[in-house]
Amino acid sequence: MEANASDALSRAYLADTLRSFRMYKKLGDAAMAQVVADADLVRQIDPGSNSLATIVKHIGGNLRSRFTDFLTTDGEKPDRDRDAEFEIASPPSREEILSWWESGFSAALGAIEALQPADLTRTVHIRHEPFLVVEALNRLVTHLAYHVGQMVYVARHLAGDQWTTLSIPKGQSRQYGVGSFKDGAVPRRMA
Image 1 (cartoon, rainbow, N blue to C red):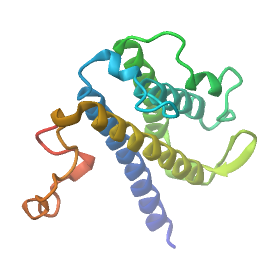
Image 2 (spheres, rainbow, N blue to C red):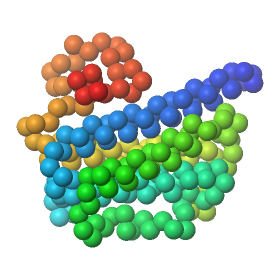
Image 3 (spheres, rainbow, N blue to C red):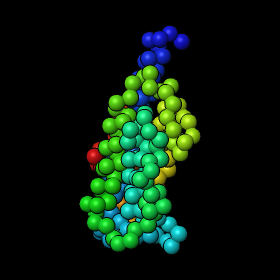
């Protein structure tokens, strides 16, 4: 592959990765916004499940750990207490929950925006295991998608009949043409 084609592919990959992270952030934002009662943010829908606050605390901790000094330090930082991310001692405020979310995404988006095409073949470590940057990014976006999906599911349950879909409503697929959701945007009614 020619250098120009390789560079173009790498730039497209980085742009798509950044778009994916922004899209999952928007989905999480829109899901949490539909949970009106702050108390519901810490509510478990069954004893073995995680609350929205717990999922957000974990996502924030994961993103901060993985993306702080992304290219130069292990993605599992010594000060991270992953197990504590799944414990909520006292109910946090909505503002505190959103600060976990925003700080994690700030670290992730800043690190991804700073990457250059040549960085994709560099090696980073997560828990001392080596990954090419492209592999680490794939792993991280998959992890994010998994947990944002959980958030949407829990928020949908908590919002009940007040829920406004974050994608194409049931029975309305034909009303949405190609390109309706450009750049990872949620439907216009949610934006």
